[in-house]
Length: 535
Image (spheres, rainbow, N blue to C red):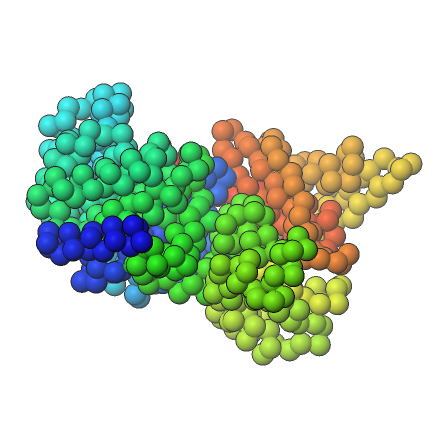
């Protein structure tokens, strides 16, 4: 009861202060930064096609604001943001910019065609950042913030200002900066826990302090952006909501710089499940949470840990006998959420080799994939090939097919042929044929094992000089005919990429993962390391 009373008191407080909560005090705005901050996960860079497909899925999910990227960071980022801006119809498209006129102009050029454009500008406000990184005084920081917001406001009415490292900033100075930014025209002010330093009670108190001591806070939405360095990002975000924040900045699967960001699915489902404690809502269509999580995992190559809250493979698994007995009697004995609520189908055996194109299209649509005729033709061909090799094709198999057939069509390298000989009395050898920008090359090499031989051959053909940092294998589904999913992490000249491949043949899956990692390295080389100014 105490939590409910406190939130109800907070709503009364907001009404008295005239605080802007999108005209509905019970709604929390979801600001998704998977494509910007999430992409800063080591090796998680995405190409423009992948970003566009994910942006479409995020709009279907119902996010209110999508931070599409940092246009000033690279031409690739600018192109991706511009394409996303012209694609989205209902979701606000935000572009990040430092408090620099050139950055802001570049951001506006990228989002100006959006149905709902937003410019998001930021500067650090903690003493340690001002002294060592910016080498600026407090007065200079306020002046820079005001000038940037005014410049952005001349371009669009939708301007967000963020105080980087806000959780370690002097509270009084933080309020001064926010007051000045709002006076200059900011409609959203964001309080980031940039380095994941905050504790929930402490962070909630800071949010309350800002709301109490920023005279014009009623003219803006207060937002929070938490990182997970101490594993408290979701807890801090929920604490901030209870204290009155009405926008939260999150990523799918919690991906992001270092230990990641606040997880969208955790915050949304916490609010959905515990509305008795936090009587607020979001505009998220929860049934698209799981498909979106899977899509992010496929595109980035970052596997969701099995025990991850809400979307992990074990989130709805019950091993203990006493749990299973309770589940049979009433699922709510051990499940506080129904799997269907997040879009997790309980019937995954769906298609076989006799299934037709129409059935495939319908099922892919149910999974959240709206494919063109050309894309469907590519996927259908690969689906038939897989269906000839295994009895049943599962949802996870279809996701892998879409990933291989659609999301990677513009890759530099592609596998054409693979043959491996290995055994207890044979020196492992691999013969490989690959396509390099449409030109076929082939070769052979030995290795300590069949996969090592394959990788040696591919490196020989591509001229790659990368180091294999990580290699992991996972079964996509149950059964001996399951597709094996391989994830690799590669490093070359300071660039780190993740690669992912899936196939019933684990050696083929390994080759696909390695080639995918090399393609991502090529993308990073073409788009120099982005300026990492993440909040």
